[in-house]
Length: 125
Figure 1 (cartoon, rainbow, N blue to C red):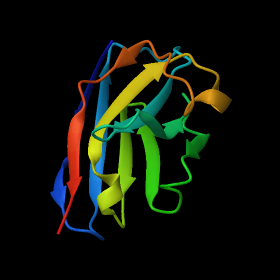
Figure 2 (cartoon, rainbow, N blue to C red; figure 1 turned 120 degrees about the vertical axis):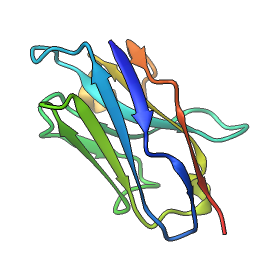
Figure 3 (spheres, helix red, strand yellow; figure 1 turned 90 degrees about the horizontal axis):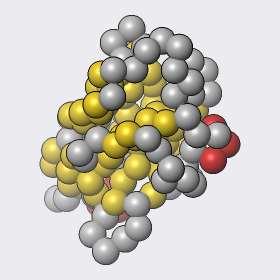
Figure 4 (spheres, one colour; figure 1 turned 135 degrees about the vertical axis):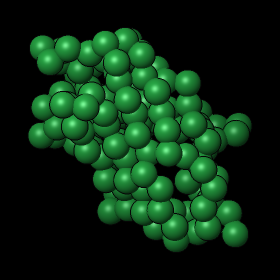
């Protein structure tokens, strides 16, 4: 399984970005949660949002609720993170991760089987 993030970049506060996580090697029978994490310089990696294998369930960190939206297109093996109303505090390297984790712990655990290489998001005026 390989995860490749795209869509990062630099935006001004209040702007939007759409991050994509393309997953190759996953099969339709995998019970795979996909989660977006981020890590800012000098800070721990934190869970941002996760989505269940079917796409029916999602969860968000309090810091992004109402601003970020996660979605999943299993036909394309791709998970999206629509990030709106971006703030300077959202600046970080964003990673996607995949694994058979307990959905209720998807933002708290780092015990994922696969990780992407990360992509930079910078929010600055």
